[in-house]
Image (cartoon, rainbow, N blue to C red; front, top):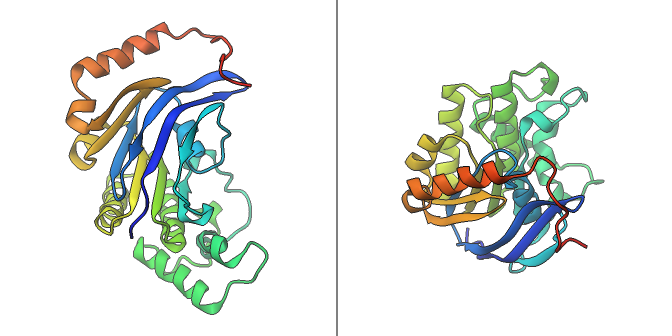
Length: 247
C-alpha cells in the first residue's frame, strides 16, 4: 500500500451554514495512523465525511492526490445505521466491493468467497447467512470491519470504531487497525478514549470546531492544548452564528 498524502488547505465546513470545522490546514502523511479527538460537536464526524467526499466544502480544499472514491473506505458510527433492513452479514460485507464491481452487477464467486474470508478474519466464520438485525453491537461492528477488509482501500476513515463494544472486540479490531498500519495504509479514526489514543495512535488531531493541535500525540494532547479545547467548548453559543464563509 502506498496511498498519497491527503492535504487540507484552510478547510471550513458547516451544517446549514452553522459552523462545524473552521480553517483547518495540515496533512495526513502516507501510511499514517491518526486519532481525531475533540469534544462532542467539535466537527469530527463532519471532517471524516468531507474526507470521504460525502460533505461539501464551504471554503478551502482537500487534495486527495487522485484517490478514487473506492480507495477511501469510511466506517460510519454503527449507531447511525438502520439494522432493520433484512440483509445478511455476507451481503453487508460484499457491499465493500461495489466500488470495483459496480452497484448493479452481480458479485462473482471469487468476490463472495473474499467476503466470506473477511468474516472469518474478524471472528465471524459461519455468520454469512445471519441477518444483521440478529447481531449484538460487537458482532455488527465486526461485520463492518469485515466490509472494510473486503473493500481493501488504501485509506480508512473510522468514526468511533469502538463505541458500545466489549473489551475483547475492541482488542481484536485494534489488532486489525495495527495490521492496516503495518501494511502502509492511511488510517484516520475518531476516538474518545484518550488512554487508547496515547497507547496506539502516533499522531493526533485535536479540534474544537477550529484546530487546536495536530502532530505527535504526546504534543497534541499536552495539558495546555486540552485546556484550550475545554475553553473553546465553554465559549460555544447554544445557537452559533451563521458561518461567514459558507455560501
